[in-house]
Image 1: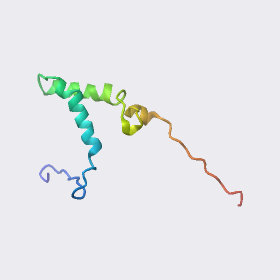
Image 2: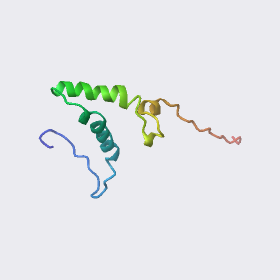
Image 3: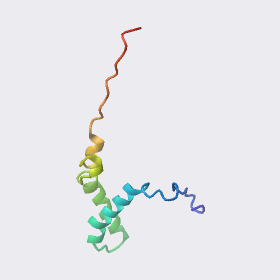
Image 4: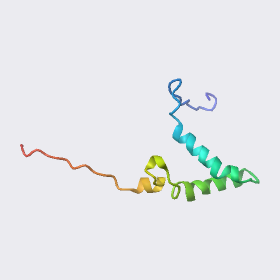
Length: 90
């Protein structure tokens, strides 16, 4: 890692939930796309995986952790703005 100037990102020992969202993404990617195909070469695999992420995973695939919205729909939803109560005393 030092040779490639990469900073290690690890948390406390035994904290297995740190990467659970990312690990779930890669599992979904493998199960729903990669293991269903046979790629002729690395470029074909890259194009297909990019297509999966851009055309399906982000805009279409529903995620339970996002309230059964796609990532694109979750990001596009308007954020709720709380009303600020101001005191009438000046």
